[in-house]
Length: 265
Image (tube, rainbow, N blue to C red; front, side, top):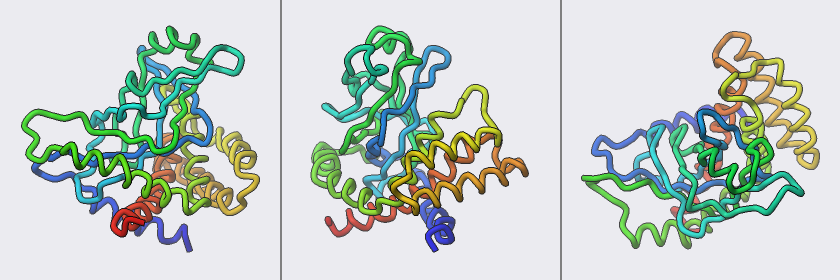
């Protein structure tokens, strides 16, 4: 039943997430905690990872792709070197955050030169997102409805904890979403991979989700669906297809978060 309703939920969210014509400040976002540090991918002097987003403000417009965000102060974002190659480094104040697909996914970026300075070879580095991380849209001039200090304090404080509890309540959906975002970050962006990588992704999921057959079933469905969609060129490559399935599952989480924020529970 879960899989059959995802498309309907996603369509509902797409309507709700249309940006407002007045271009008021977009939603404050939560960044979903990573199950394990995500490997950096570097190109043109920039290293990045893709991270699941959590919409914390249903009533504000969703961010357009490319909208700039910044992590709140003291956010738990850490650059992690390969084991035995140095100490982890807190980088929340140094990262650039950019929305990719409205609130469902963001890119967290660092200059490659800074990664090398902090932990050495970027190929040996990954990024970890801790619990309760929030991101604020970078303020723009002439914003007709900017975020107030009181609004920011409430949304990134007590309501952020409510959103986290709601997002974590459905462990099956959470584990499947984490698995898919992990796959996305392990697939190349510069030279997109196709269906030949599905077997390797399935092996990753089978290992990571051994303790949750229901989550493994959701991810298996996504991989099977992507095999068909790539065959008929519905998506250009596997990373884009798995990102789409990630967003569909994230729509279920978003609905749960919105309901919890409305009731404060």
